[in-house]
Image (cartoon, rainbow, N blue to C red; front, top):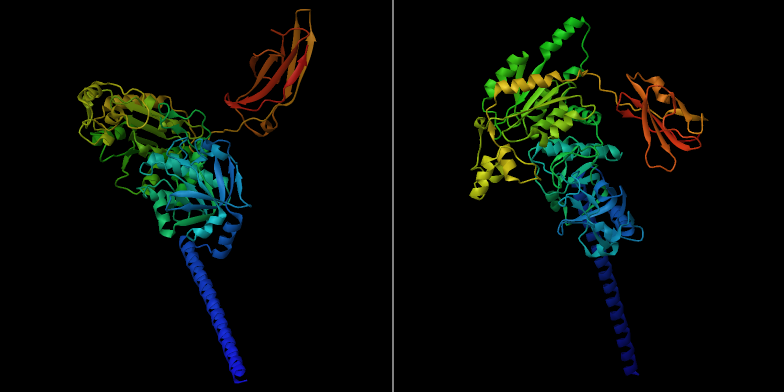
Length: 602
């Protein structure tokens, strides 16, 4: 009996001990889960703080992370080829450790276009506006969204971002032509790329000397590739656009063929002037000509305008010098009876230079990146570009091309030093500044004896570099002669009124009538009404272009006509079907669309 009682007591004790252990274990497990949850919340708070270090925009970290895990990355692109493609991404991520962008796949991911392996032939898109350059390609790696649980917690960038490459941020021409102008109009294409959007530069350069110009595009500080490391190993852009529009570029640098104007330019001076005006507003610069003048006689106004005219000369302090600059400036002042102002990128702020150029009558400079500032000149101004000995102005035309764009309304003149004795070369400088001491003796002698740099590809041609970095003693009589001759062909630009680039619409109600005269003769009469928009326009010259093609033939007969109807008899056969197209032309070069083709049976 005692034994059974003792056994019962032991069983109860064991049971109580077991219960106690279970309770303690449960409490410990709950504490562990609470600690884990607290750590997770603390980590999410930390990641949220890191995300908000990038932006003033608030972000719900948990919601963003859940969206990435459940929906993955989404991509929709415009453009058929990598050279004209811009892509919009939701939750595109960047791994700073691997230096790769990452596309996370889930059942809700979208990838348009879905190119498969063609995405690597050669790339999804160009990160720069410089077309099809193999250092500017963009692509991404792919991972299942489930792998996020094994990766560092992402930092989210809540801003709408534009991700791109700057092509050469040390060179002012490249800054404007390749970066600022394309980025400005890319941002105009997409409404959410507004003043609050953030630019992200992935080419790997430092800020460079012109970083303040990039800051003008957005109220938020641009991010450099190197800075992304500071915000974590995995960054995810909640909404981003990748790539740049190439529509505003007008020049190709000679990577495939010698440099020159782009074959199919899509930009006019109107778009460039709007861009220039926007930048001037950001720099708090007002062009003097835009301030309306008070009344007064035409003679008084003309006299005041004459007094306000001045010439700007770019002064260079290190390379490609004008050795007789003081004499050169004096000659300009005497020839044109205007004051001459010198400006220097090395010594003055960029806004102060733009302020001066924006009202100048003439801009004079040695060939160089500083001439891109001619896009700030007023309409009717003159651009004068000087070239060192052996450098042919017809082979290096970025600024001539800019000045000649329809709607820029600038007059371009070039002068070339043809006297070898008026040049100072620098063969012992580093190769990138034109030095040739590193070359074989025979090659050095060939370059020294050459009188004209042959056409070449970019970018390290030693003969080109040797000649373009020469200093020049400008032969003033020949320079003034070239300038006077060039001014004779200057068009009569109206400074305040841009040239009209309005195109005609379709001609209306085109119709044809035919008659057979004999078995060998027939007549075809074509008539039409004027384009609808013509009645609202003042157009100097209106003509009509008519194409007539015999059905089944490959050639057509073109005619330019001043009237709205015409009877054709030459080469018109009886019992034959003709196809007829008609369109309107304004001022010799503004073409309208063809009206629907007419089928006319004689």
